[in-house]
Image (cartoon, rainbow, N blue to C red; front, side, top):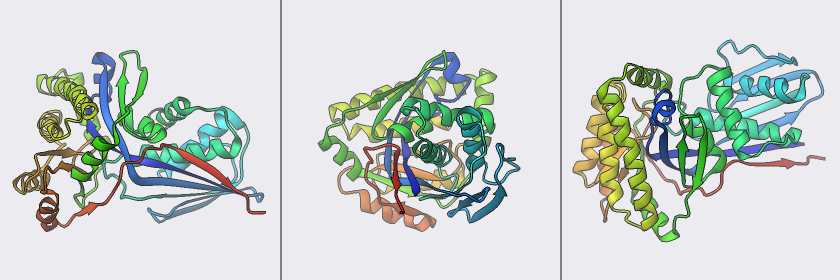
Length: 343
């Protein structure tokens, strides 16, 4: 048999950064995000030869190991090994033999939550294979623990929940470390209008989000006025954008994206750079009413709201930067797993 899982990548619309500790623990955070038709996929093929084969198709990495209850991370394929180690430790208590293959539709470090989404997909494949009693919240929380605690990867709290639940979600982060996912019932008219007017542009550069998030967290810990006040504003914008989306005031979202971007740049000097500023200004000059980086910043994807008939003009203007505009639709479903019987 072959076990397959896929989870959608997320597009952060508002509130990003307020899900990062220590801000979220001291003030509480809130984000608005949605998932799109770009995915992380994982496939498990059980083996009976006491081997573990790990393969990442998009990173072109491959390892064949002897089956063991714990796999040394040593910098290679850490997400694949991290999930396996936790599955054995928490549930199975013995070594397994299998081949695990993964692929992600966009480059690593692109700002769409690739690492967390891949972690969710891998975890989902193991849950399907081993029939583990985990619901959506438990899968998202376990994925978060694997990344942040086991692997010591810096990051926020929203990505694992977005990938697991799917669709439009308003996610609140309590001071007590609680997470509440509020699925939004967005009318199809409003959803289609937003989808029609958004440009998702890959800048052609990836980045290590951990470094930016560490710098951002440092600003919070030092209680830098600019960083904390900017985060307060970004959280407020998340609530405003949620109301606009639910009420169908879609055209106001461009202005809110613009306000969010201006505040986000105050949270860390690493969030933007000359290239990103030039891309942003070019999109605005071509007719976009607002936009922002997706994810921590520094590179990866940017999203722009293009009212009226300005979308193609914006895409044409951005073409000079050597990146790529991605076609997408909003994905309503989250983590999906199934088993293919081969005999």
